[in-house]
Length: 393
Image (cartoon, rainbow, N blue to C red; front, side, top):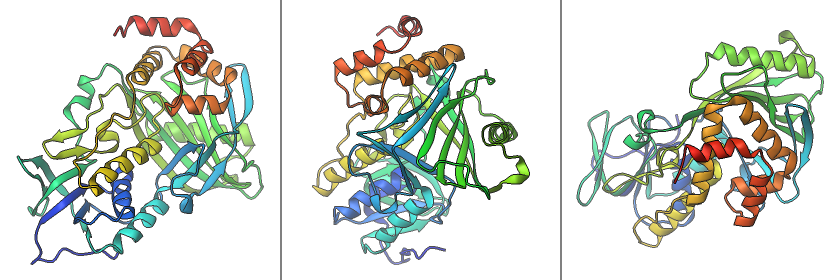
């Protein structure tokens, strides 16, 4: 059990800020508040603060990475394979980084426990709602806490539910971290996409993060509307390990498993749930629709929010995507949702005709219009013309 700062029965239940949910987005906001020496009282609420090594967050950066103290692995070389094209792709401006969930959680919580104005409460959340001047949080113990602002990552806004979306796509994946006696992996090269042409119920690929010569995380990832039975992911991974590396099931040891479902849909940016209630992370629409990557966007958004709160201002809300990038995402979602073969063609041409640095800059939404046009000119036209026809502005 983590060493929490318990709430005394005699203490007030009023705070300046409440953060509901201690996942990536909730902990990130708490971190930037603590780092900036926020002086108000902060309550962080979650069912449990126990660390779980069940997620791996990856991101790319062309500057000093976020949380350099806990970077688990860094790569500058990747591998892509699809259709008749395969290549090693080198990064010059960027590097690709990996952070493990348990390292991140312990790193942030260690700092928060040293801050007397931060209170950690392990309790289930029953309800969150806004009033004229305060946000209200009710726990499953029927205790009530109020704050000037509540930031939450647990309640889904109505507008982002499946029935309101045009493209309710999901990125779902299952991964197994394996160890082998023989050193078969290149720890300097991660597999960004090895496309599976035998799977037609979605755009599917293998994703491999080698941590050492004899240890790697191997994930089967699918972009589709429906999640698969876990045995299907496992079967795909076993087949890949056998065909790619020559190892049967009894010739390697499974040391850790990951499973995740990330929305890749056309949900709107939804900064608030109610008056004085602000959405964080995926619940606020911060997941990049065309890739599912969230880590960098959460850090940028959390840092901006924390800065405004530290300065005594109302929360500064900025859409993480300009309109043109949201439109680009919608066009790709249309292709991914309607044609697996065309999706393969698009990604093949994207990686074949552009450097990884150019792709990452585009996906980071840091490009100029001229750079956007170069990217667009590098992929097949017709799938996008059809997508435009179905998404006229």
